[in-house]
Amino acid sequence: MSLLSRRPGLRVGLLLTPPMLWLGVAYLGALAALLITALWSQNDFTGNIERAWTLDNFRDLFQIPVYRTIAFRTIGIAVLVTLIDALLAFPIALFMAKVASPRWQRVLVIAVLMPLWASYLVKAYAWRGMLSTGGLVDSIASPFGLGTPGYGLVATTLTLAYLWLPYMILPIYAGLERLPDSLFEASADLGGTSATTLRRVVLPMVFPAFVAGSIFTFSLTMGDYIAVKIVGGTSQLLGNVVYDNQGAANNLPFACAVATVPIVVMLAYLAAVRRTGALDQL
Amino acid sequence: MRLPGGLRVSLSVVTALVLVVIYVPLLLVLLNSFNTSRTFAWPPPDLTTHWWQQAWHSEGARDALWTSVKVACAATLVALVLGTLAAMALRRTRFFGRNVVSLLIILPIALPGIVTGIAFQNGFRTILGIQLSIWTIVIAHATFCIVTVFNNVQARFQRLGGNFEQASMDLGAGPFTTFRLITLPMLRSALLAGGLLSFGLSFDEIVVTTFTASAQDRTLPIWIFQNLFRPNQAPIVNCVAAALVLFSAIPIYLAQRLSGNNAEAMTGAR
Image (tube, rainbow over all chains, first blue to last red; front, side, top):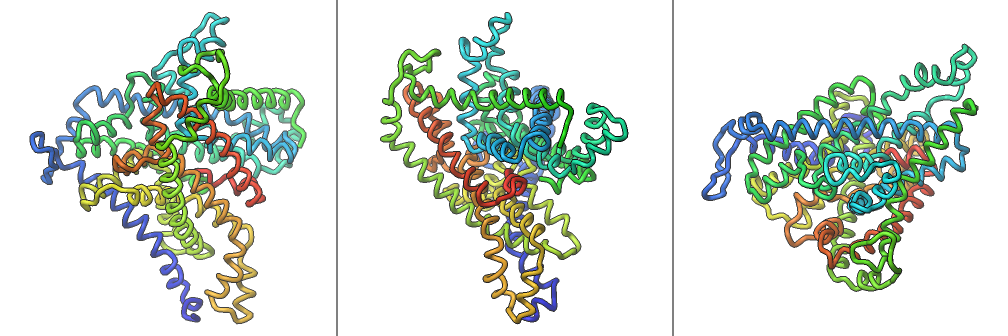
């Protein structure tokens, strides 16, 4: 027993072994296997996977224009969803953290959290109903001479922004709550208007929280293929290509090759934001 | 905290508006579960509890619910053990590779669901030659649930420090006695909060699940997705959905009571 307290390294090693076997061996192993399978091919006649190295999957991915379009479309929607959520989340988070009384703060946290527990599919499905012709969006927009955007990329963007909004509100709220009130007072004492205070004091300090939220909204959007099936009409995102290739088209190696695109995008994003300290706020 | 009046008013207006947008779709689901029209005509021609009766007796929904509960319980159990071990290992000690370990813990939620899904499916089927089953779902779910427990436990450690444990060791208790009598009671509510979040995360997951479930294993989200577009089943699906919305209040309430600290209860929220 005393051996464990005398040798902290041994203690850490023993504690870390089970989680690292799971995450480091099983999970990272699965990711490595994904990259390897992406370099194999599928025999069109037998449907078996041929374990011979080839770059054909990546050649198809880069040279067939439709995949490039889908990749950029997916990234574009992920950026758009992240921006919409950041714009909507900031005022709410600020209200929750700095205006609401402690009692209301509790109520609002629950109000924001609760939709996270309501089924994802239920929410996407509710939007399908609201966006239908003659649905709620249609009846609200018609007096202004507008109509429902119908099922497509606009509907997908709206639905995804709705689904992931709490993931953006919560980290920003937590970041704002950590800001001492004295900062606001100091800025006001030094003659800063509320706009200046928000822009030059609050925003820079909660920026890591924005980044933390954006990792969720970005990654969740990149990895989604269900919402677009429900409200996206015939539009496709990267997730649909991956899913259809492993399922209906039965070309697992190509599906793996397509899945490397979101991996590369997310790893690049994580590497870029690592210095902001956002990863500690997840 | 005094923000200028104009700013306070506009902030509260925006907050109220967004909350309305957040809740209207959920209320519509509730209302439509009583709608007599199969296609959810708006406004509802009449109200009925017929669909609720049908949903209550739906075999498919019951089986799927049971599968989901089993998967979520098993995944949460694994996540509780592994998440706590990881948080204890990273506590107070600085060692080479510490950042790599914390990155590895968040990676399953930072990478998109399709990546985790296809990586596991390919790993199980192509590389290991294992048939997909309820256990492959559990393995995949536990992987991204670890972080919720880890976050909650780590936050608790940071808040409470290590004085009580040191006192216990000074009084002659070994590491295991200290863990059982001091650390575990100290962590109890953090573990419950983290476990609840992990249960909810697994219970609602669909993207990774579609990749790691066999055709026979239907979790509730998969059942909903399969029946969503069937005109006969749509009203029943809607009732199940409405019930899920109502029941979601329970874990939230519990997590709030348990953690006592807002920020802590949420950081695990994926």
